Length: 172
Image 1 (spheres, one colour):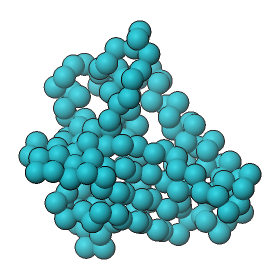
Image 2 (image 1 turned 60 degrees about the horizontal axis):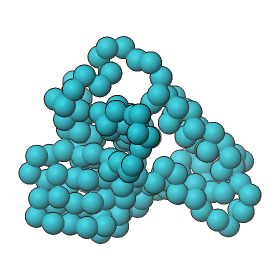
Image 3 (image 1 turned 90 degrees about the horizontal axis):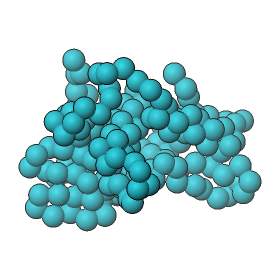
Image 4 (image 1 turned 120 degrees about the vertical axis):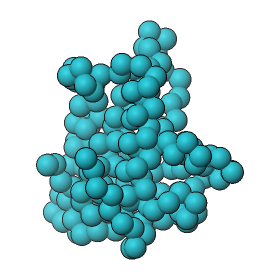
């Protein structure tokens, strides 16, 4: 498993950027039929998985504070901000704070994902901006949400938690 250097470690922000470049590129690899976008139902299953992974990190959506930070040894700071909250949905911003190799005092946000959380349906999706005209909408949503799913799993495996009392969910 790829690991990030700690905030006090010898590695610089350049290493972290290189790692995220690889993770994002992995989303474009040809994969088995089980992980290819097959349709709307499969996409909703992915959104449900994203929701469960977020609950593992932050607890139930209604209890998420306006701004949460998770700091663990030997990893970047993970930040979750609630940008907007309504009865049925919330808009979130999830990001890593990476040290900048060129300017040691500067902090970069990579990735910096806007998420839409559906409370009643218990779904979480990456909000997609406009993409290339030739790119199918399903493919675009699938690749961004697979990246989110892998990142949420990675953060949980590293030990990130926004609530100290969060109970890990068993996958299976």
